[in-house]
Image (tube, rainbow over all chains, first blue to last red; front, side, top):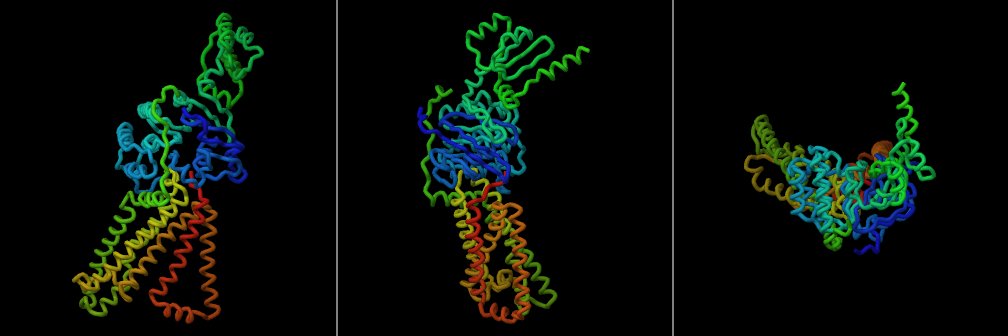
Length: 306
Length: 258
């Protein structure tokens, strides 16, 4: 696989709205033909960042390259992108059929059969006015365009918003199938981390306009474990380690620590401790809030006892 | 997961600028109702109403087809009935078309040039249609029922070519006024709207004040009279072009709302 030139290269990117920095001195790269998760809380700057990457917003400072050039007003670059925003506006009288009819004029790799079968899978009423679609159906329009466009750099902006469980599974399956046949770079933004965590190969976590985490998803998953057991045993085991978070009830403790080697894992098991993997969501929540909840939990346990 | 990949990586063969601009025209026209269906539906309804109005006028003045009755129907604005809707279409071409085009990976430049080309094409088509209908109405003595909708206001006075030119300019102005107002909003949001409307109101009352204080109304009237229909509409090309070029400059730095 050709991984020589990154799809996106961002250096010192800042976007200010007045005095407020929506994106604050951000640097990262996105390798080609990988699935990236752009994760963060509401208002963290995900949409602004994607708008900058697609030339919809203008950067205040810093440099931004997509396929080797600035995307702003660059027809060559923009033709390779697809970004249907979560809040995408459509002309007043538009129906989904109008979107599917016009999309091939803008996406050179558009697959009309694929789009039609996706519309059926999502049960999208093609001739209902878009302004009368439910939130889930509106998300489906964006998801269908994103998938069927096969754009070399495709953005999915909160694709799960309003989708029911079946539709979410369809999106998940179709994305992976089609991605395997037509590899491309995908950036998926969401605040529902667990829903997408299995799709992601790389994770970018953004909070208050800054990149908090820029890591391979598998590495991230293996980067921490939770040690559970008697408080004294756990404390002895984790002493001197890098503790991410700590939880405890009464005599029991549950501590999440970074990077355990195989030997250390074995040592933990011999010491009668349980090791459990940390979900991407837990890990990100812990890293982004970075507070321990032991005090609160202990207090709760105390009040329950008295 | 990378190991699962079997296909070849996607790439895109870039499209030429004329093709990209034409695709924007097609995007605006993918729903034919907006630019063609509804305006002609409105014109059709206006014609039906005009038929009734003509009958009422005929009944009260004692006969249609007289010189008075034909002249009286000139005051009807029915021929311009679709224009109110078409201003809104000009607004929506930007306010809804622009965000969608950006999502489809269109540059601001291509979007604006495509939109302007669409306005020119639709204006030309409408001008041709209305100028021809004006002639047909004369030839058929008001569609054989002495009903005059198209020979109204300034149309049908100076002949086919003046009708064609004047309607074209008027239609272009309608589209570009709607589009440029939406563009000002897209570029500068509410502050832009406030400044624009205040400046426009001040410019109008300022002009009226100056003409009144310098007692120049008769001169202004004479000047208008001297221009003739074709001259007036030639002058209207100036605001149409200003709105068109100004809109282009403003949109180049505009950002869609979230």
